[in-house]
Length: 120
Image 1: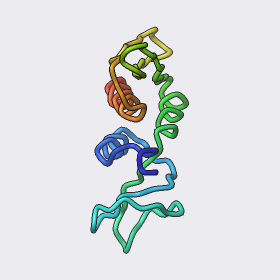
Image 2 (image 1 turned 90 degrees about the horizontal axis):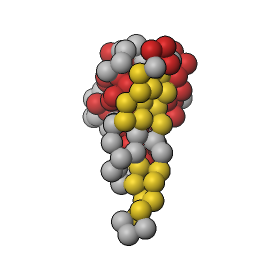
Image 3 (image 1 turned 45 degrees about the vertical axis):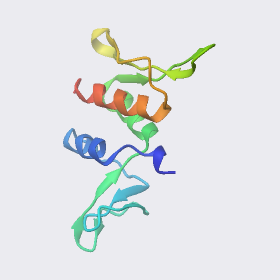
Image 4 (image 1 turned 30 degrees about the vertical axis):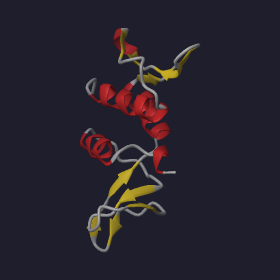
């Protein structure tokens, strides 16, 4: 289930760029353990780091910043399935491919979020 959520590093970068949405998961400040919770922002008196899902990030970028992140799939007859990635900012027609050789769907989205962070 943890693969549904972005990495701790990405969550920290998102927070630095203003991501402040309610999330289903957080990183425990004492043990650095990944945990699910009910929208609390504190754990034993300490501020916690909310860990969003990939879809929350995709929605946040689209709704708050006009940035679209996509991860299309391509299938090679001999090599199997690969995921690519594309980031597009609506207001300036900027579009950037950020790779096409990801074997893992979530790895492709993590990279897309990294690229989108550079645009805000």
